[in-house]
Length: 306
Image 1 (tube, rainbow, N blue to C red):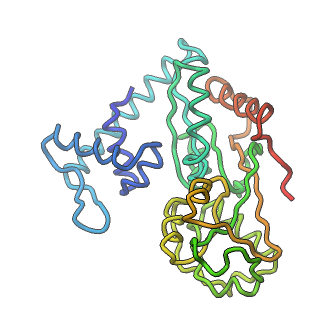
Image 2: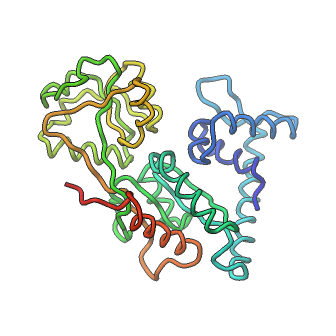
């Protein structure tokens, strides 16, 4: 029910980044830029100042954001008010997903769910695991899909997808084709996800289990998305750790290579998180059951983490 351009505007205003807004909305960055440009042309006023390295809201942007938030809240209230009359097969599903899941897994899942439930729409909040847990607690979303442990009491956690995190290298790196001794990992600049990321937590835990001291590692950069990490490593600025499922295209093209560290294997389970209490109902319950069905009938079945 919310105007799409205003939804894009609100997301950019919240993230203050066209790239992060594109990830949250499951759009391309040019599409987000086009929507903002069209809105500014429609209103005949600039909403963002793009002169510096980061964008900031103009005074007009700050004023519009107040009204846009009110309209979004009113649209949600109207949707909730009509939900009982529409039933499970229609309405808006509000979910959250960690960045890797949102970018590499969720589009396919939502595509099939949408075909099975054509009268539904989906609102997705994207962020790191900590941010998705907070959104769940605040009631912004009904379900969350996260990459790392929830690390908060009172959250129901259900594994639904197995994943492996691998070390990635520039195509011509000297470690390509080698098993790197553990004590050599400190020689290279490491590109990590930001603190609060599920991937970051899982990688650090695995390094500790492999007796690789974190204090001796050279963490050269902390970035907030897998795509950013891949681009930095492709440029030869270090090595890093990402989901194996996120680099299939780059491996085929030969622009990145997978590395191996002695005694280090990083596996995890992606998880569904929800608040305790009664069984999920409505669209949230339908989507939860859909995820369980997918895991039962396909290769997405969860494997025990070794």
